[in-house]
Length: 286
Image (cartoon, rainbow, N blue to C red):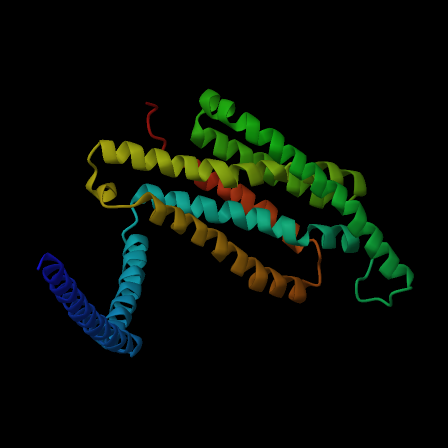
């Protein structure tokens, strides 16, 4: 009797296990069918894709409106800083783009359009190679001035540093153009490194000081402004200067037939930048 009972229990357990396995197989097949149906639904372009497109479209228009509002509603301090930044880059880019061409044509009297083996073309290439030494000098001055500028600002203040730097740049560029000789063109071109260092450091340092000071003073004109957005406004000034140099300076050179025109524009822009920087607002130190 005990053996028969165990035998029946064994078959009962086996039957329950087989029924449980069949139920699990049915459940697994149901899950697979539901998951495949869900995957097919997600793979099709549904209203979720349309919602994403709607959000992306309206966020784009919101960013455009935000940028436009930030530019139109600029505080007076930021407007003057943007104008100064634009003039500083206008001066530097006119020098940087046309300097080698100026030395090759005006000083060495070369012609870039002359035949390759001609004397005029050789003189132009020689002038361009000589001008590269002036570019090396401006980079060295830029590195040295970048290390010195913090101490200069502590000594004389941001406004006077900005103004004095571009007075030096304007006068040296004007002297280089007036002398129209090889040695001054190489030596005086190095002072453009001052312009490069100031444009890339002092403008953004002043902007950071404005945000810190006016937000601590609870100035409503600055309380809602974001620092990144205002940095992009200064970057827009760089792009505007590039566009102006590309179209206007090229047109003036074509009209006047004078390769020294960019150096004159660089000189005038630097002196205008120095004048504008004299009216910049300087916030108190911490």
